[in-house]
Length: 182
Figure 1 (cartoon, one colour):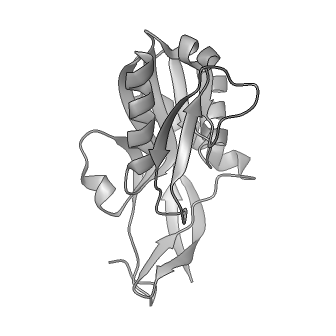
Figure 2 (cartoon, helix red, strand yellow):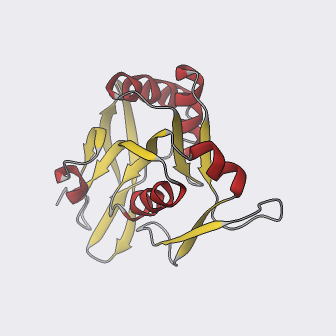
Figure 3 (tube, rainbow, N blue to C red):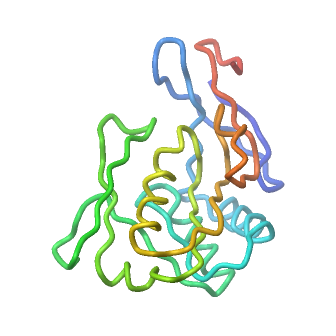
């Protein structure tokens, strides 16, 4: 089963993926799709307030954030899913995403903290569903003393579309087991 939608002016067929017997989600994968990544970055930047740094989690949002950095000329930081040997003075927060089967950590090292401190930060993700990843990134922004100026995503899934604190390009419904939107 697939869900056909238009995103940033481009048509895509998204595969439906089973979460539970009664709940399916559409898989939006930006990896390997340069055309959609460039178009979404361009459209999100048109909506963006003034910012100094882009911040994303080590997820499928990385290509989007990279492209937004490239188009805007601003730097980006990736919060890693675990502390790396090269990281010093690590800051960690927990995150539980709908597409991951276990609790994960998001980490920043001292170098990243220094690059974010006192800066206007725009959080970027590919899809916001439960908002857990964005909440973890917000915690990191608060911890490093950055100023959060926006939370941006290509798609808002399900009830996330009702949130007033995020900016997104398109609504993505949740699906029943027969492929119809809920």
